[in-house]
Image (cartoon, rainbow, N blue to C red; front, side, top):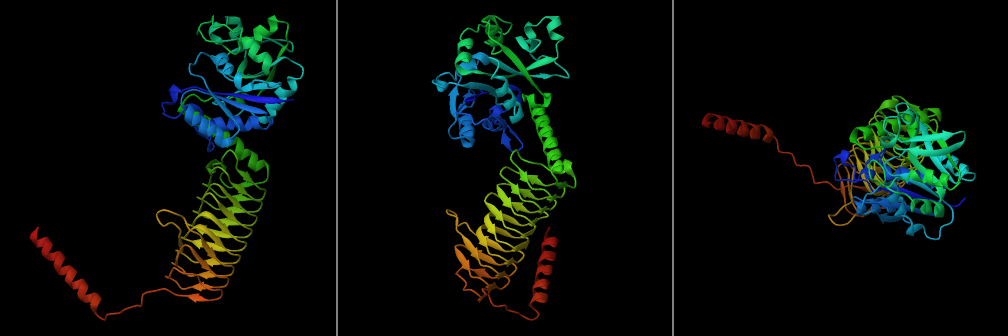
Length: 450
C-alpha cells in the first residue's frame, strides 16, 4: 500500500519550560521527532509531512537533517489536532494512498505496530491505534462494539460510563488521505475546549456508513512527553528496553543499568561492555569487541576483536579496524586505526591514518588544527611513534619509521627512518641548589615584610 506520513510537531510544550521546541528534546541521543520519523520511515512512505508551529525553523532543520525530502508546513494557530492535520493537505495533493498521523512527542510507536495498522487499513476505512491503560486518567476513550470502532470520546466530554472504559486513544490514525481530509472538513469545534478534534473523524465516518476499527499496542509505545519528568521517564524506558534487547541478542553487559545507548546503536553478539559506557548516535560495534569502563563513543565504527578503553573517547569519523587497541585516556576523531595498530595511553589522534601494526606511544598528539583549517597526519604501517611525540600536520611518517620520544615532527619521515627533534640537554652542576637557596631567601624576606 502507498503510504505517507503526517507528523504533528507544532506544540510549544509549555510544561517543558524551555526555549527548545518540545519535539526537539532528545531521547537516546536523538530528538523525539526523529524517533517518530524513523518509525514511520520503515513503511517506505512516498511523502513525509511535518506540521510545525513553535520554533518552526529549528523543527525544519531537525526534520530535514534526518530526511532531506521531508516537507515542513507551519500551523500558525493551534486550533486542535484536526486543524493541524489539515495543514498537510496541500503537501499531499495528488497522493492516492493511506496517510498515517503520528506525533512528534510520542517517540516509541514501533514499526511493527505501524505495519499492523497498515494491514488493518486494507479492510477498514479508518484505523485508530489504541491501548489498554493501567490508569486511563484523562485519555480519550475508544468506544468499540465487536470489531467496530463506533466513536472516540474526549475525557472532558465523556459520560461516567464512558470514562469507565480502559481502551484509550493514542491519537495515531491511518486513513486514505483523500477521505481523511474530506472528513476533517466536516469537523466542528462544539466541545468543551472549542478545538477541532481529529478524533471526531471516527463519528463522521460511521455516520456515512464507513467502517472504523482499532489496533492495540502496549501502553509503553504510546508514552507521550510533556514535561522534563516525562522526558526522564521516556529515557529510562528506552534504555531499559534497549539493554534488555542487547542481553537477549548475546551481548555481555557487566552492569546494564550503567550503560547508555542511542536510538541507532548497533552492537554485535559476544561483545563485552563494561560499566559506565555511553554510546552517542551513529555507533556500530562488531561482534567480539570489548568496550571497557567509562568510555564514550559517538559516530564511529569498531571492528571485530578491537579493545577500547577504559576511559577512551571515540569521536565522529573514527574507524577501528580488526584487533586494534585503544587504551586509557585516548581520544580519537576522524581517524582510521588500521588492523592490529595500538594507541594505548594518554594520546590525541585527530584527522589521521594509523597504519597496520603501528604503535603510538603515550602522550602522542597530532597537531591537526592551525586555527583556521584541519590538516591530515599519516602514520605508516609498522611504525613506532615514541612517547610524547608532537606530529605537526600535515605530515607523513613512512612505513616502519620511528620517532624519538619527546620529538616535534614538522616534516615528512622516510620509511624505516628514525626522526629525532629535540633541543640538546644542558646540565649545570650545583645550579639547582643555588637556585633553591635564592628562592628560599626571597620567600623569607617576603614573609618578614608582611
